[in-house]
Image (cartoon, rainbow, N blue to C red; front, side, top):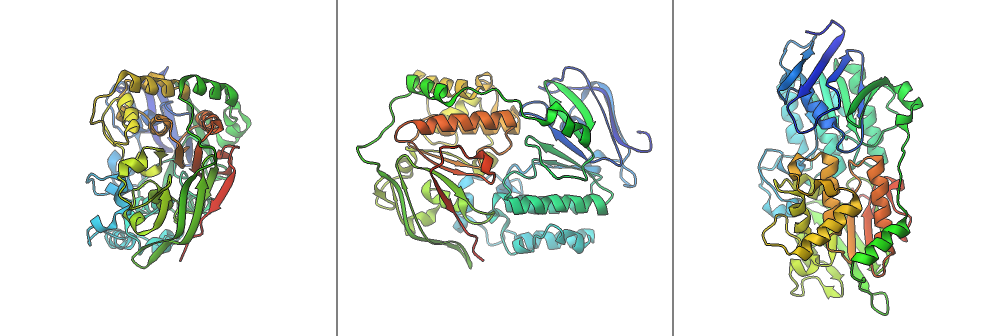
Length: 489
């Protein structure tokens, strides 16, 4: 047991896991504290959390808890973690990332948000007024599988609260949220802290402002763990972003030395044309009478609030949405539905999205994951040449993750996995690069580095970019065009 005012105490703990800290973990959380755990990708944040949750046996040291006023002493009853890996396989069944767009494959029994919430209210007798603080009434009629990335986070946080944990650990709760929803979730967390005997630990790679009820920041970096008050953190060097970057021109020169010259005709070709495109699911209209043209060499910022249809729009471009064949869409000069295969569409496109991250759960070496991007497979079903692997090596070096080449993808941190999938989008040097929230879960240094690589890539002739983000600072300076989608009622 811990002392009366301490929720948990980790003492000189060294877990049996692949990550090793420089010194054993010694850390305690008092019952009047709320934490933000902050650190770069691959720094050990997940190892720290899993040690706290009892996921590892300890070589030595101990972890002690006092969960009062909870009547249960079990760690699994009192510490819950929300990680947002895969909204599309919520019942544990396997899935594929295109399933969101293939409603014809859904069972009629697929639950709505309202179905799940009503069942939880009956089981727990929970306070409905508390739930309203998250404002998910607008989601209740939607099937869970059809929630956008941001909508799903709101639902998942609300659902876990019904279990009344003493410690709620949330991994990157704000990624994928527009500004309004970030404020909404932040206010909801404040409501939980003020009204429930619950403590919250946020795991973040991008520091979040205005979380005034969070008392402490625990930094995890360079194999070391340090706890300080939020005020101490704001005054410290840890708060700043110290990033050393190569110049965009240097990165571009390296690309030009290794990669073949980019395709470019005498006149800028039309890459994409959508005319009067409307997408509906039942009574819901996602896109209505959309007209959009993208020409070779243009760099587009695709913006809009959660649920406005950004990912749906990109699913039409990437041939993941079957409704594309009922729409007036031309891609690289070919009318959609004119007899082209899905592989002919994808061969010119490099693509990364939150859906891909959530559903790409392959036990394979990193080099194989990236190699699958050369031929647009989700697995690795063919033998690859030395030339293929030389391309992989180049992009791994450029992104600074060549040390991950032989590692098992599933053993990487979430941020490292996202970096691997970003490399996968670049590996075939595509004519059209589509990046849907590419910086989810990346730390300051990796965001800055990846933004530089995107800039350099787009400086090459014939390269076209479509990028989605809810943070204006994420867009590279090369953005030349903007399209903003409006959410339909």
